[in-house]
Image (cartoon, rainbow, N blue to C red; front, side, top):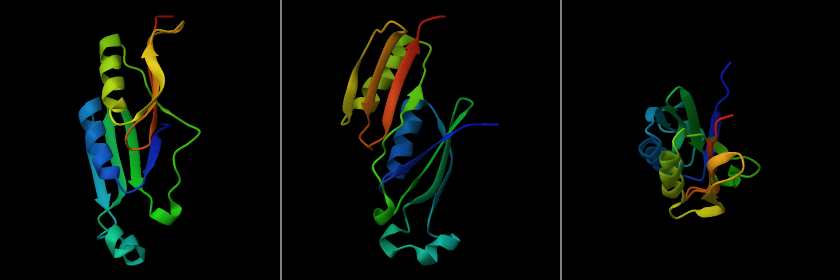
Length: 136
């Protein structure tokens, strides 16, 4: 069994996934719009080029997402996507790039359990935790 995150966006899924692909060194494997799918007939014209499903691999993990039409979109809350880079410098790079034009919730720094840890909400509204743990 695999457990994956599925992120919902307010019309900027394509931009977000292209950004994550670059920052995380991932590979977008699928990015489908509403146009050309059975959902097209039930989708407002201005929303047909929005993403109905995106899938990206980062190493052996999968991140998925889509755009949610405005009447159904809810701001993400109650979760964070957690990244656990092994190298503190890489963790710091990822934290600062994701934090650009976002909101830092917990500054990136050393904790009792981690070489480096920080929390942020990126410019797309997605909450992240970057955790570079110390050896057990």
